[in-house]
Length: 267
Ligand code: CAA
Image: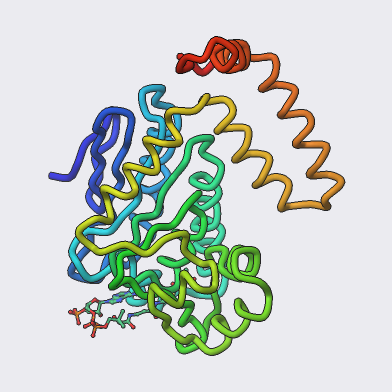
C-alpha cells in the first residue's frame, strides 16, 4: 500500500501533512528517486491536493533515502521512447513543473542528495531551494544523447545566467552544493541533519505574513519573468491593487500603526 490522501493513493511518493505544511517525498530510493511517468502523475495529484487544501500554507519537496533528491528522469523507462512519446512525456513533465511553480503557496525544495536532470529541473521549479552539504546538481542529459526536457533550458539561465547555464547544460558537469550556492542555483546550504528544520523555519517565517501578499508576490515574479519589464510592471500594479483591497491589508497596516502583531486571514 502507498500513502493516501483524499481520493488517491501514492505508490511512488509519501504525502504527509503537519500543521500548515505538506511534505511531499519522492520515494523510489532503490533507483535514486528516478522520475518515471507514474511519479510525475502522482506529483501532479499531490501538488494539486496541497494547492486546494486551505489548511496547507506551504510545501516541502524532498527525496527519500540519504543519497538522492532525484537522479533525473527514469532512464530505463525513457530508453524505449519514440520521438513522439518522448515529446509527450516531456510536455507532461513540464506541465507538472508549472503546477508546483504556480501553486500560489511557497514550495521549498529540500535537496538531500543528487538533483540531476529532471531532479534539478524539479528543484528549479520550486519557490526556494535549500541544499544539504552533500547535495549535487547537474544537467547531464547530453551524456545520454538527449537534452534537458523538464524546463532546464528555460529555468536554469533565469536562475544562474545564460553563460553558466549553458556551461552546465553543455558539459553535463555535476557540481557540489557549495558551487550551486555560489552561482545562485540554491538559496542556502545547510548540514544534512538540519535540512528539513531549515525548510520548515523558512516556511514558518513566510507563513507569518499575509497569504494573499505571498500568493500574489509569487504570481508577479513568475508572470513578470515571462515577458518584458513593462508587462511585468503592469502585472505587479494590478496584483498590488488586489492586495491593497484585501481585509489583510487593513489589518496589516492598522496593526503596524497600533504597534501590535497582525492577525491575517487570507482575505
Ligand atoms: N534512471 C533510472 N535508474 C537510475 C537513475 C535514473 N535516472 N539514476 C540511478 N538509477 C539507478 C541505477 O541504475 C542503479 O540501479 P541498480 O542498483 O539496479 O543498478 C541505482 O539507481 C543506483 O545508482 P548507481 O549504482 O548508478 O549509483 P552511483 O552512486 O554509482 O551513481 C549517479 C549515482 C551518479 C547519480 C548515477 O546513478 C547516475 O549517473 N544516474 C543518472 C543521472 C542522469 O543521467 N540523470 C539524467 C536523466 S535524463 C533526464 O532527467 C531528462 C529530463 O530532462 C527530464
